[in-house]
Amino acid sequence: MSRTDRSVARSERILEISRELTSTVRLEPLLHKIVKVAAELTDSEVASLLLLDEKTDELRFRVATGDPAGQLRDIPVPVEDSIAGSVLISGEPAIVADAQSDARHYSPVGQQVDYETRSLLAVRLSVKERHIGVLEAINKQAGKEFGDDDVETLVTLAAQAAVAIENARLVSALQDAYDQLGRLDRLKSDFISIASHELRTPLSVILLYAGMLQESVDEAAEPQLNAVLRAAMRLKHIIETMLNLRYLETGEMELVPDRVDLGELILEACQEYEDLAQAKSVAMEVHLPDETLHVDADKQKLRVVLDNLISNAVKFTPHGGRVQLSLRPVESGVEISVSDSGIGIPAGELERIFDRFHQVGGHMTRRHGGMGLGLAVVRGLVELHGGRVWAESEGEAGSRFVVTLPATSAPKG
Image 1 (cartoon, rainbow, N blue to C red):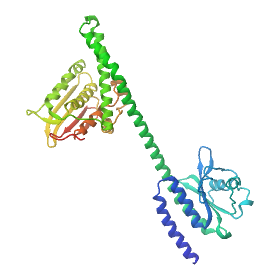
Image 2 (image 1 turned 90 degrees about the vertical axis):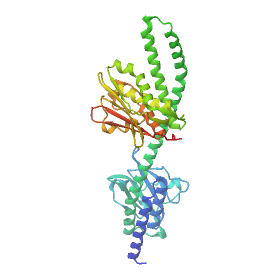
Image 3 (image 1 turned 120 degrees about the vertical axis):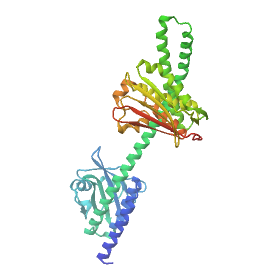
Image 4 (image 1 turned 45 degrees about the horizontal axis):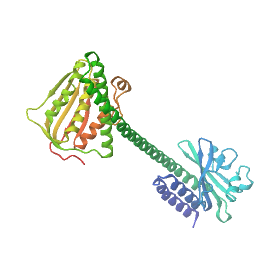
């Protein structure tokens, strides 16, 4: 085969290898593939790959052909006073015909794995001005010397390999972050479950005795007792919200479908929040259609949806503002909307507010309280009924939450 034919064959093989490298996203298989190809293309006994450890500023062997036991793995090589280090620093490929007589040769590696390096070719691995390691071909077969063709081939391979390594590292980092988020998510869910169950028993006792005291308390102590009851009821609401979220996440939420009069349910829910609204001089308006609108749904769960939406509307509406609830038939079933004249929601937050623990702005969290769970529960319960929920807002002109439900649909199980 002529030199030209060999060059063409190498180019075709490198192109083929490039496709293989870009399709390999797991780092370890990728590194093994790189050194195997490096040895093949340069007709070498062995090829090895060292990556820079940015914490220690050392090169470390990651993989080599002919090293199935991984003896070389993680052996450090100083950047100063080594052939690989000089290539990393200078960026110039190095051909060493007699490694044993080269002052830069780092002999402890060969001694540790009982292998003699006679000749080598080393090139740098770089990605966007970042130097990440060195690729080496060691001991040309049949006692031959490395030549310009080998340099050109290994430089081309190193350029493709460096990009593939960086991509694999990014994929690995992304997967690690995803796994970590999953672990944190499970810890958070476990905490919610444990905290909720541990708080329910003492809270039940508090509510029981506070209710009994209401029957005999004197007028002077009544405000203090009412304050205890309000705080206990608020804690009960938080616990129920956390448990609802937990059951939604684990798929343990069970619906008890019934024929529900939505207009009646809305009026009941509004009545519950009249005192809170009056305390802030917030006007509550309800707009119902002349016809009675029914849905097949879990009445208790829909009440949780309404309670959260109305509670938020009153909470975020300033003194003297207005909260409006409306019900109307739509093509897909029925639509419930809860509007307020409050502080509004930034456009970038309209979808995120339904995420668990998400709240709009730290100052709002401090002023209005809450855990950022209510709307996550709302979305979960609405979707469990086969419906949709979304938020609308224009600047600081208030917010509107819209829930659509199918008129007669089986809940999602």
